[in-house]
Image (cartoon, rainbow, N blue to C red):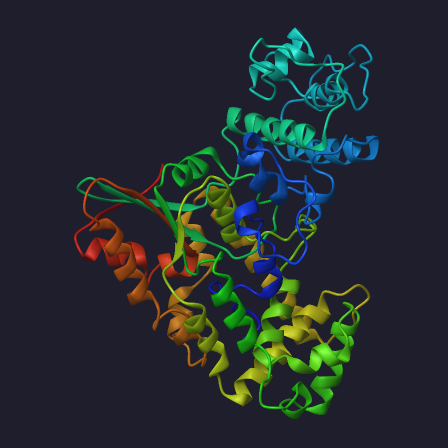
Length: 460
């Protein structure tokens, strides 16, 4: 069971990674101290996903940039550019540039990262190069205010725009498993996602971003902005009958779980409140990260939700939190214990200096290979390669207690939801993003819509 990854459910940490606009954050306990300006909204999702900002952004986003922050930003830019494997600039030994926290200094620092590669326009100098890419635009008179102190927000947006501009110019970025369904004047973009952040998945390809922003409404498995539904799901993960975790699993497993979670700064009291299936999902998510997973751990669905929400697009879910919670909460006690044991074993195998048995080590290695292959296929928009790696037929045909619930019981409803968008009156464009396993066969949304007579094609 540990080798079969759940593509349909997000854990609490991933849900909490959603970055919401001020209007949706108003209910938080502490009022934000600093908020981004509307002109920066379009940069928030990418900046968060790529690590240019974090959960504490309301404490610094409008403040003057520091040299330490500039170094952090240019480090991210450097890593993203290096991932493109562009030709090296043979004339990279340029004149020394002033690198400081003025707007001009920040621009020089970003230009310097690009100057290491053979890019068009570098000969024109910092201002001309960055202006040509749309990274800086100046005020109404075109003044770039080079001598003025740069705010964190300004530097962050410059860095975000630069990364996207260079990736777009090189037709780079993660393409995703993206289809376009058409019925008369209605268009429905279908994206099969993976509920993780790894394998250097950001930024996303321009075609995927354009499809998202062309929509009038964006839908996911769940409405990630539904705080009441989320609270209901969280409540389902904990015991309300007076019992504790130790009452539902073996003493040996309880001891291993406690040791692993205490190392992650959870108290025993907190650990005892959670049900085995909830902890199993947590360990699965923790074991599925890699060196490129940002500290924000922004799963693809949550990136899309953040981008849509900051753009002011209506967002909704095609399933409820209660439905997804019940998939797990009604699993047998025996299965939940096995599920937790398998997930914890793979997590333990990935810890530094771990000593584990051969079968567990092999399962962990196979899990890592599967995830990397899945992401490679996803990033290349290679449906055939993805399907070979993620064998849905084997999953739905197994006798595993959970698998039928994840797909066989849910795919028909998702096909109906997708068809409803295509049957909407008038001329509309919608965007539906759900786990990739729900898109592929057997029984997936793509073939389901085709069987209903709709035209569905993979986006080139």
